[in-house]
Length: 247
Length: 388
Image (cartoon, rainbow over all chains, first blue to last red; front, side):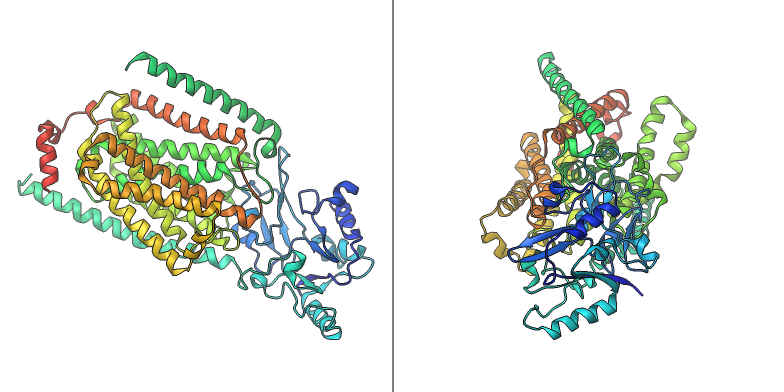
């Protein structure tokens, strides 16, 4: 059963306990200065953002068909059957195509390191394997971030919207965005007002490049026959001309 | 060659190499963050946009000329084949050199060869570039073997030359277009004037165009540098093909913009609009010029038109890699001086090594046995060519 995270913006109080727990789990330094940074970065793998009266949370979305995993030339990123998209730093050569391609601009780079790695949330893969909740969900004092089975969380999100239609914008973000994500959002306001991209395609992005890559075998086979044929004809023409003494 | 001009160029070269060396040291000591203006929002900058995307394209003359001379058997272009292969080979070596600067872990540049992900365009490009650089080395090897008088390896290479050339053309077709496919996955980031499902086809077509332009450019420069006569009939012949290809490229480009309803974007007064206009002008003007015989047969005008095509091509690639990606990434990117220094040093190195190799090896036709074609008086040749 794939796991997921549900973030309920209406419950979030902006205490940033999730940020602190995440930093602790990754052994990253966390102080007031880091807490004040609004963006994801190599030393901040989740971030609470403020939009007027509303909070939002940024972290890796753990797409059902991750763009980052599809573009990685060395397969350093992959989607586990459990749900998290994980990163193998020992393979990564630092081309940063994942960062260019990610529709949510999540992967961050250790720009100032001499042996840099990509950094991103891995949905506490090791903890989930052990049956424990993610560090952020465990730390959340108000239940704004919860984790569990994706299907159960989708049902829960829909239940909350149905129970209090006045408090919720009637949609769950992450259900279909780029083919569905393992991080789901519910909010009081439309999602673009809490900094989420609402113009993304509803289909998985990897299909876009696969369509081009699919043509490779045809280019190779048709191309070699065609070029070989052209060479044979032009060469033969010259040979014949030479034999007949026209040249 | 008069001495003063030489010293100026040598001085410029020395300055560029010194700046490049210093920037290289900074890159090694302080990492990417210390020498580039790249960020999590904008992870690819000048080194990918120019050194890789333009570098590979500017080296496309190699496979184009190989196809013309050896596959289509149009033998009269043979005198400019070797310089084109040399340009391509150096181009690819320099692209790999630039990648060593840009990769976060250059020590792992070989990883895609053993860690496969066939779903990645980058994986395909990595393989194609590796294989094609090898093919180019083998295509250039006869020049070295000839000089050294190694008969046996020369014979071996001759034996595999046709399949080798076919493989080279196919590999080029694949990765020249795939550099465009890299951007197919960012419909949400790349500006509407550049994002299209046809990106791979546009990258391929424009690479052939700039390959021809580079061949003209490089013939003109070597004719001056080595005090030879420009192979004008050949350059003019290439220019005519170039004009037709540019027309095809621009026609399909505009058709595609119309099809996707992207023309209204041009009404907005923003950087993207102006740089798009620059790109189109730099490709359309030389197209009109090259359709005229008096431009094609005048070395100076022909050269100017070729330079315009090269700049138009560079504008196109930088527009895709930088201009078009800024708005979607929500940030601005201007390269730091160290990024520019590395790029310029690599370009300068390319010119210098080309010169050096051309001085040491039989690259140009005059240095070999003249064929019957060349014994004909040049005016007769021109007449004969135009009559065809």
